[in-house]
Amino acid sequence: MQELRDNLNFLVSVSLASISGLKFLHEKLHEVETKERDAMVTIKNKFADTDSINSDDVCFGFVYDNVFKTINEAKYTSCIRHNKDIVVDIVRIKSLLNSTEQYVDRRNSAVKSISECENLTIKRQRILSFISSDHEQIESFIADVCRITILLKMLIGNIVKLNQDIKGLNIELQLRTDEQMKFIEIAEEEYTEYTKQHKEQEK
Image (cartoon, rainbow, N blue to C red; front, side):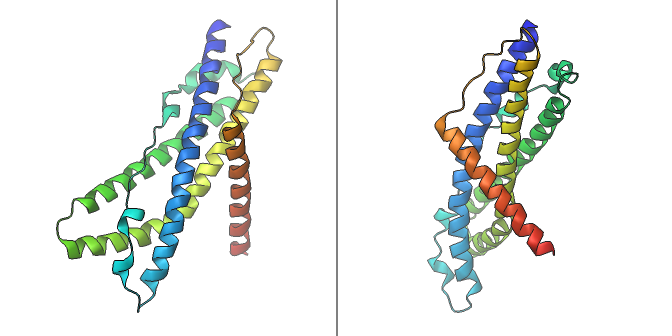
């Protein structure tokens, strides 16, 4: 029982830390999305001067630490008979956060490569190409960040329920901060709107 309690306490702690990390990433992504949208207006305008685009506003790297990858889902298999969703949720969240980390790494590598380009003409072309490509991906990536946040909220909720169902478990449940709770609300609203828009587009 003590081992399970310790493992679940650790899972809650890591889940909350992951929500905070996603909140910071979410803010940066929205910042970049706005600047890329403005840049795309200039890029698509045949008469506009693309030299007016400030690459420093868009071509910068993200800092992201995927702490959830330290979670070993095998340690939670004993929870299945009480709640079959917990291990499934852990595996799903790990997979999505691994994809998040890979996206950030690819983007950072691309930005680093552009910054190291010494030919100014080629560098400018690569900046414009990067903005166009990243702009196409960033909306769906923001939606993924929101989806993961919702899944983390659900996981913590399942752990709370587990604490109620297993007599003597007595997990030391950490409370979400006001900032985390506000971010979860924003993530839920944005993900609902994103899925609604894409369903309408598919009609």
